[in-house]
Image (cartoon, rainbow, N blue to C red; front, side, top):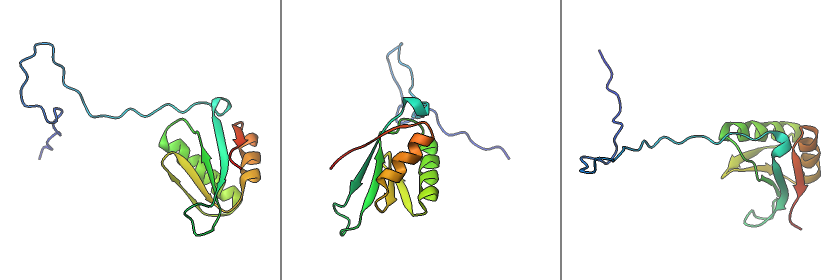
Length: 115
């Protein structure tokens, strides 16, 4: 049995323009920059979290897979939980200095941000 291929033309039925080209809705993933070129910001946040502290790492440029790998590394080295949301790494607890030290060891440029 043959499988049907998904339609390449989404929401286009007919065009009278002779120069019209169909656009595919494929998202190209961003290339991950080398660690030396990354400029990461590490900050501590307590807002909207019932008084609990969360360390946030922002500024990562690259694919979501590489961001998740970095988040997994940071969580395991700190020995705590966390998540990756909206191109940010959230680590439970106050680990700003430790995360900056880990990022410097891996070759990233990281700075403390916020108060």
